[in-house]
Length: 183
Ligand SMILES: [Mg+2]
Image 1 (cartoon, rainbow, N blue to C red):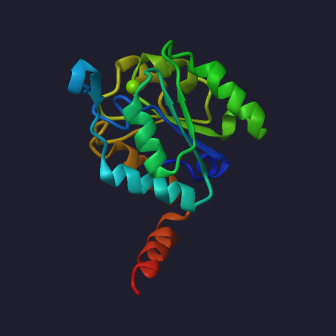
Image 2 (image 1 turned 30 degrees about the horizontal axis):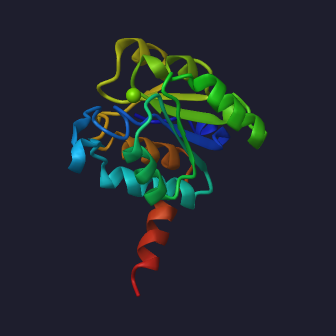
């Protein structure tokens, strides 16, 4: 699915929901030594490189989750994403409003890739509302773009490529990535 060039070029901040977008929505729950609760999530490596490409294109990246999880914090740190917001009440609008105010950005400059009802209020406001193949029907109805891949299975990477292609930046970024690794 293509993203219109004019929409793609107005984006300054790309926000990703975590569960069901960066992951397949599954959460491994168990206990570590001493019975301490342990929660693990499975992230996708191709998605991770996609996020690196957004950063290389000088786009701001944020993770916005309605669940507080150490796995999310660790993954964000690994990707160099400093704007990680985890609100247990999934109050995503006020969290994002604060970030936009701090950066002097308008909602029209934001893209959000979300999958479920917690993303719905934000998807209704942003300039580029996007979703994954296995999104909730309510989310599908407001999304302007949908991946063919499911959350946690390359949906993030597919979205990044579509956005950067629409901006005319994808091929150059791939070339630059390969050049830097060619000795
Ligand atoms: Mg979600």
